Length: 330
Image (cartoon, rainbow, N blue to C red; front, side, top):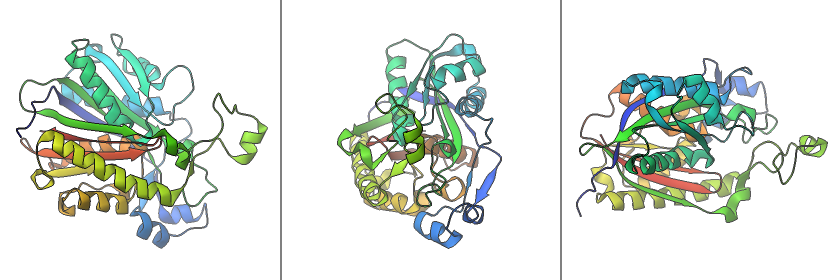
């Protein structure tokens, strides 16, 4: 089976990370935990947290601005602006519209994607559709997550896992063999309550009871999420590789969602990819939800881990439940 010809390619990437570094020892001063417990179970040593005045839209706009600069285009060239976020700054309007205003993308249609940690990959596939339909020349796909705003800081099993940040990429129509080679996406709403926020929405509006129960904050069934994440990311990776007409040993680099080092290792094993070919930054940033993959991609490109001609596999899993994978040719 020959490799499919890509329809869209990356024109530029960018990232934004808050300055504030919070170590595991810092976390131990907030909740009953310690560095050894966090590190051995998750691989996380530190994470970045934004300040109260920094919004998801602000972080996303900064990442988007860098992606535009790297692509060599201006904000007015963007026809489609998609923001993936599980932490919207407000219910109306979309975070994408706020980011659009900050960036000055006056010619773009802007909207949010809500698929939790899988959202950026979902957004890439949506942008692919708009570009190949001829409805935009350039698409800017941003992931912006302020996870510190929705975690329960009294729950030591979850608050230690997450960090804040944003990543972005500019896409354009492919002119050769570079770009998105294959994609696979799935979801299962039957398992939604394994990772969710019970209250604060339209079905359970915010009130004193929701606040008292802390139901507006993230709840997670850790063991069940782990099992489903490994199984689903392995399935997604297998399907994306099959769609690309290649096997795991033909992948030059894997960039998985940075949720937990054990999930990363298990997914790589199922995909038959050695860890020396896996990009890992969960130790420095924790789980940044949908921002994890674009931040890692931008870092890998900057560090020279990705060179022309390389094949890259990415896989993700998140609340919904949602999951997916892609193969990229650079």
